[in-house]
Image 1: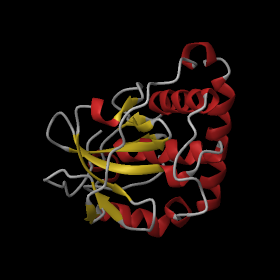
Image 2 (image 1 turned 135 degrees about the vertical axis):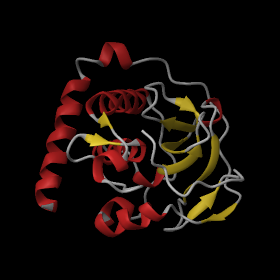
Image 3 (image 1 turned 60 degrees about the horizontal axis):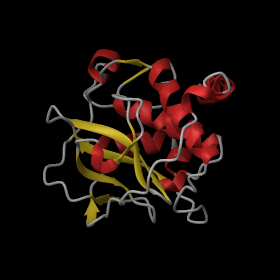
Length: 208
């Protein structure tokens, strides 16, 4: 089953990258202005569903400290990021885990084309890593959204600051322009999570 899932993900990654050429004129833009980085302030507990995800998808949680800690935000890398963010947002159908799997929170790679917030971001990271971006510089992040609910985004740590990939918008924004309260994210140095200073941590990230 896992092998079939890997093949399916590989085919999806190929389709997304092939489709990037057609969308190039729409997505290739000037690099964003440098922005401030989000600063971790201590340790934090991961979301419970993250722990289960890492047991099922160990390679997606592996941390290679030999990888760069920041993405070099070249024009080519920016185009890849913007294109894949947009195309995954369009290709995955949003559905809560309760509707989809009849559980409160489950993290996976949206192998069946359906997922909620964290599944979008995990799939984006998988494809971006396949495209050559360092996984260590792409950190799953828990926030409180505009509805006051737990939400998952993907933080890209770059040499121009921290930018966020989100399934609620295809705009790749500096973290401090999202309007979210940032709670915690994966550490770049070990398998733990770090606090980003938000006071209230959600138990799940189960919205769309």
